[in-house]
Image (cartoon, rainbow, N blue to C red):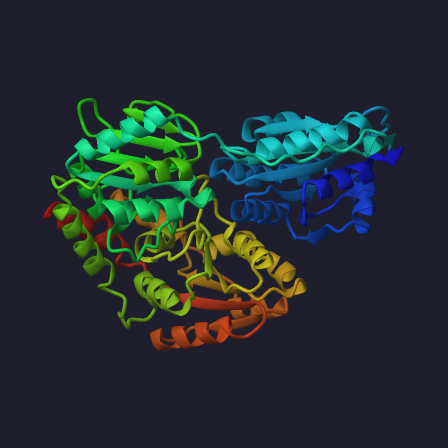
Length: 547
């Protein structure tokens, strides 16, 4: 017989778990004691939300569920946002929460919520353990469902009295998973549609970034000469420096690439994820769409593809690449023109020397100083649009942004998880002042874990994204300004190293120093968002329309 909490930890080890991020409570103490002698590292965080974001990012970067831990009640409710973050963002994650004894308790309803029911709408799987002998099957199922397409969040509640029981059920083997190959007839039909079109265009979505399909896509693009663009969460699947890359769908409409989409007569949609804002709307009698994914398209009034190619995405793209023939009647001249305009537009303010700095200049300086495999994580704010449009990704998953739940507070924890997974890579978190303060306490965790991360705070003393929307809708400036602490002193109070940018020339020198000097570095960088409305709402629309 094995103690239930020991069996639980053994089952996690059997799944290959390396880290558990979280904050234990008294209901987790049996599990914590079992964890003490395991090969799994507990990363103690300062808030359950930080733990959940770290676990989700671990899943995003590895493809294996990241694991986080909380107590019952308020600890569990603090995991709701990370659960939604992982579920909407297709990041495999397992949450473990404690609970009061379920068989005999003298504490009435103190701290007790129906956590399993609370988690049901925002997870793929949620279950309470009612017997030690259920642990092996419950954990295996939680990992299986969290990992398989479409990935997401799972949840297990381990009550205090069950954790102290004993059981004798053996662990389950973890089988290798082989994804199905596409149907040959669907491949043939896709090839025929592409060859018959006049202006085909490839869209790379989040699903393609999850399964490393870049090699197959690159070969297809170079064999055919077909141009491509990506969604925000599809960036980097194919190197954005490629001559046939025309940009990223960062705005909802009226950007340069939207006019390219309008001209295309066929969209080859690779790894489309309905969670991301659609970069185009289908119309009856309009352009045709091929949907290449692990699962069939969710049909709605703006998305109803003409063909589903189902199965492993990389295999589907590879088979299309092998069977397709480049056509003389294909005309990519308009796409080439769009590409030239995009390059000219996004580089316009790269060397602008005003202070506070424009976001375009900041993006350019970060891109120049980061190596190809360096990882930039973003919190959520208006700067996300500038990074999505202007930051070229050279490799997959090197710009981690959230275009699904789009929550604030995830930028710093995501950077910390990325550094744990890739200790030899440069890692930068770019946060607005508002988003940073939502989980700024994780600075202490980063310092304690001796992580070499750089946090850049774009400081405008306001909720800048909403101010931009407010201006775009013609409303008065109201209700979105605030004051900030002295971020340099704040960083130093945690044992981090604080820096303040005092001129545009100072930024590059400071960032270079921080990237090459161990420690947790925080850079307070004043930002000028005054051109956001004029450029993003007015000028882009006018210039793109002129194409």
